[in-house]
Image (cartoon, rainbow, N blue to C red; front, side):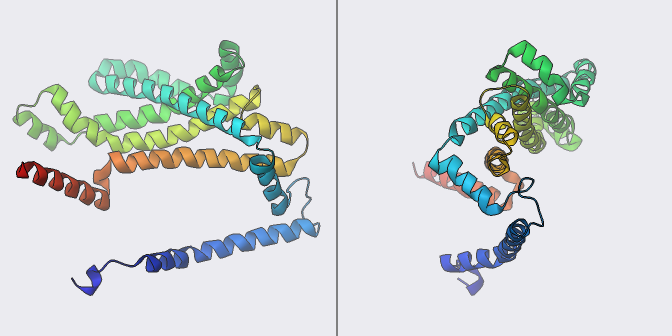
Length: 286
């Protein structure tokens, strides 16, 4: 084994990560320090932008001292995930039907565009009137807002087919179902997951907007309460909680993208090839 092929020790990898992220940590510390000093010296009014230390105290109170954030956190997370699941299910189904039947696509696409250009916040009163003040209205608005990016990306991926590959499939006698399952669907997965990532984050936006309009539980409700009380530190701490929800949703979909659409990444493709080789080797020994 050559020197370049030897594995890097764990301490070396940690040191390398630390060196790469050190400038970001330094910049973050400088910004927080300048922010703290500006508010403490009166350059910035604390009622508009509270001190970072006050925001940290509010985070500790929300998550540790009182723990009031957890119920609202999981309610908003549930609304976003369920709304996304409904919107994605409808969007993918319509995209598949549209890719297989051109007349259906011509009739469905204009309605999808109309739904997309209609501001989601304008739909909120109508959605609440239809579904009430419970979780139903939040889930419905999340589903509506997440629908369009998933529909467009999935449809685009399904209709953009490599003609040479499709001709090869047809020359081998593949049926239309086999062409769709083995060629079109896998080729559409990268764009589909791109739409999923956008749709999942917009579903969170829809759920929070509906909570702002009218709700009794959820992170949006909690933030509204703190804002009306002029407790800006707790309000910004709650806003950071929304950011955490968005990061959880985005990177969960990023993880699924990495595992399912593995052939786009060299390391994942190599790992899948090694796993398949081990499986074949085990079968050969039997």
